[in-house]
Amino acid sequence: MKIFNLFVFVSLIILTDCQTLKNASSDELAAKLEKDDPELLRKKGTELEEENLKTNWPPPNQFLSGSLGMALQNKFKSHADFCGFVFDDASKNYIPQDIKKFLDEKELAIDAESANIEGGTILYYMFSKGEKAQSFDQKYFSSRVLDIENFPQFQLSKSPNPSFDSYFMTKTCGGFVNASVDAGIKPPYASFELAVKNDSKKESAIVVLSGTFASPLTELFENHNLKTYTLLKLWEKYKRYNELIGACYYLSEFDGVMIKRTASAEDFKSIEVAGKLDYSGTLSSSVQADIGLGINSSSLFKATDWETIVLTNFSENYKREDLFREFPSVDKIQTYFNGLSPIYETSPRMVENGLHDIVISMENLPFEVSNKNYWDITDWPTNIYEKKPELNVTFTKESNKLVTKYIIRGTAKKEFFTKTNSINELVALFKITSKDKVLDKQLVVNVDTKVFFSKQPDPELPSKANFEPYRLSANSDKFGLKWSFEVGFLSADNPVDYQINGQISNISVKNSSGEKIQTAYELYVNKEKSKYLITVYDPTPYELRQITDNVSTNYNFEASLTIPLAKAPAGRTVIKTISLPFPYPVINSLEKVEVMNKK
Figure 1: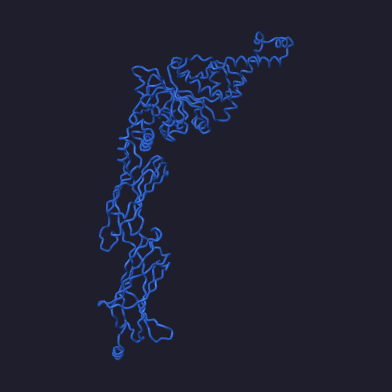
Figure 2: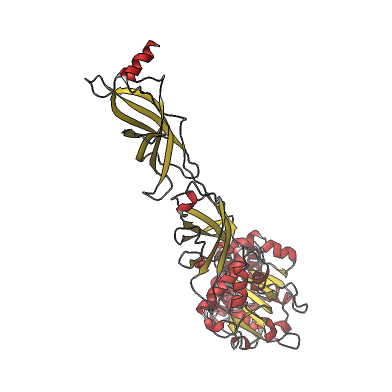
């Protein structure tokens, strides 16, 4: 609205004061003036005035090469181009006039160097010893930016330079024009229309911050919850660029200006929502909160297209070499990481022939190290496992945290599941080691846990088997004996697969004297009851009157039962010995039967 009102106001000035154009008119205009044609006079007068304004706006550039003012020019020029204010004259000053509120002519004349790194700001760059002594407008290599995704590209120093103010400015196309008007410099009339048109897209605005800036790396390397993430990112850089090990530095703090042009509706909106479009003022704590500047910042400050301008007016109190800090060494990274304790998940008990998982997790590890090809199990408890356990590594995001899970999978030795074994638990120590080395050093995840053993599935049997006679054939008057009983299992730790029938073998039915009877058997699975039904047959022929429950001999049934497992790898089973009493209700001689019947 401000732009529109200004447009109307200036137009009225032209209409009421067009007589002043006579001295600058052409012969054609002079002739028309004599005819007193007001319409043509207004049109021609406007054209001449517009041309005159274009010539003088923006004002000429007075900054010297190598100064802060000259360093700011390119970014503001790109914004002016987007707004449609096309200027071919390189001597124009594109810096908004109201920047003088916080950067006066003296400060704009300070020596400064501009650094523009593709893919990140200079505050994340890995300088070699030689590079830190060079000008900041040197050539940079994007591959040597320690990129921390979705993280602020800079922070304000907690100990700013009191002689260099922290200031915040945003400029839309309209703000660019209005800054000139407020300074008493008339822009061309076409600029108002172009400003309204391009600001309606809500995409482009210049954002400028001045002050003492600090690299977020300092905080990340010390106490931040992304310390592990950052250090392992650095470890990977060392692995790639061995020549930087022990000889690389980062720009930790400097006086200067951060500047960018928003190129997305998201960034533009974040400024608009904060109420800071066309804002120009001190960067107070309340303003910082409004715009989200800091560790938990908006996407605007996480973007990697900020141009860095470093003041280079070095003195006794502001030296180039003092701006840098050394990156943490390989030894420090290894000592820190290898001392971390993983997070343990509750593990199930180890069971016979079952695959057992020990699951641990580490938070905020980079994606590059969160895969099974990066790690190997180099030490494991050989007294527990049949062979070296397998390792799998997964990477997920949980509650805004990156979670890397290590799954140690193996099978316990069979000795822990025998009847005579009394060991219920053991300490299990592992080392999960990075395969690649940096200066012959490796990262190690130390696992210190306990494993517990379960002998399940445990058979659940009746106290004895029930018997009944059965006719040996349809026309026979002889009978055999059969016993039937159900076998269930206590198997929460190691579930039985009742969709597959088991197998029975090594059947033996004998008395205390070792006398055996010949048997046949049937085994069925009752899926509904989750039990096995076992029927044992003794085909010895007896007359029915010889079979009675008044007299019986105690026999004992024993067999090996092969059981399919629900959670074990396909084809894996366990073998359980089952045993229970078999009453043998037979009177061996008919004479004894007669005597008993008389009684």
